[in-house]
Length: 78
Image: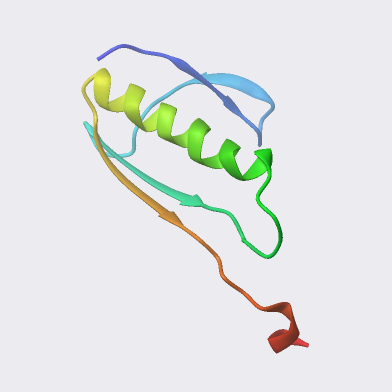
């Protein structure tokens, strides 16, 4: 498997990707909250994380990928 760098938003630096357990990578991605018209920002979460998942699989990782879609009616919360 190849080493590659990912940007860590917490540290503000690029770091070598190291999975927590061997060749298994688990990804939980927060998807869109569809409360209005679709826009380009909705596509971004699908494209970015799908490309990352496919790349990880391509270089030999076993990826478990979960993405949610939040469907909340704000009027219920108030």
